[in-house]
Length: 226
Image 1 (cartoon, rainbow, N blue to C red):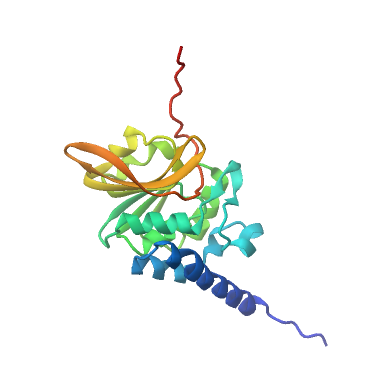
Image 2: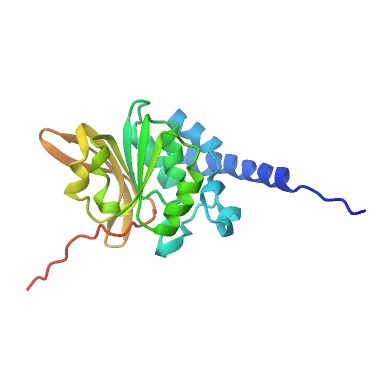
């Protein structure tokens, strides 16, 4: 009689090893120094938020291709964004670019509530399954650039990817003194930035040059010069 060996424990242990290696080599050495963010990323199985074909490479320091021409953000980019966000346990968060739900799940353990927006149907379906047990996360399927004003205002806006321009429609969903962390795309180069909405206006300050996934629908209007 042949014996059947359950490979699940070995696979889980392999992912645990890769996850802790990611924290040690990618995050801690690159200014992801908020203890709550580090602990959340050390605990959460990133592979559970990816298509089956990409589970084995979940912890690589590279962009992972997803449905609809999208990419899953680098762990370092997400970690730096969440560190810069200075997340409070009472924060109401609007997440733009939910992808498979990984950043939303991280935020669920750090903030009070999360509204996660995803426009790509395949990714939205993946995220809905992965986030089913997260009671404080609401997944909204719709245009990324539109956000979700119905649940605003928000204390924090997290754009988990790079955009050319931040639409006024998203800024209008921020509460007074609300914070923003986002990736920015300028002439093919991506970087990370943070800002805050004040009575005097709004501005973003760059804080890192890091490769990150580019999100669609945020293109800056082009003008002709003569």
